[in-house]
Image (cartoon, rainbow, N blue to C red; front, side, top):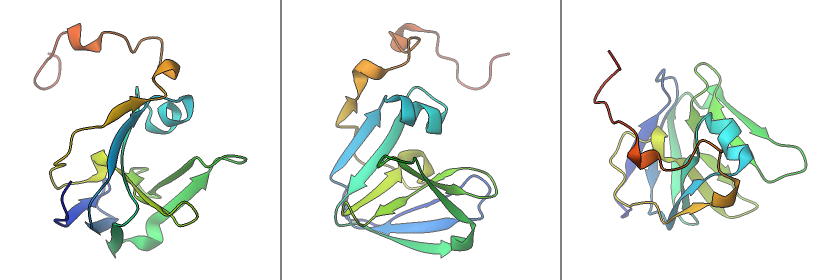
Length: 136
């Protein structure tokens, strides 16, 4: 992603933010922890060692959970539970859930990581039916 500012928010709109600076990487993580906190086949996170987050509104609604004994951290809206950016100063990282952005994500994922840990149902998903909208 280039250095053009990106904006995002949680699902309910209580928390809004702007990211300035570019991202170095974009990973789809299949580890069990990321599957648990995303509720899906993988998490989709953008990483930057230089970008900054500016909380435009709702900073008081942000909760952060760190799994004890690990570096696994998730920030989320206390109202709707949506994933939000995480500042990890000890690692020098800003981690931004790609789905939290309203701005287009200009870069494609670099890689699937922890792929050997993927869910047993996460195989050959490209071959299943694709429906535009809800099933009828």
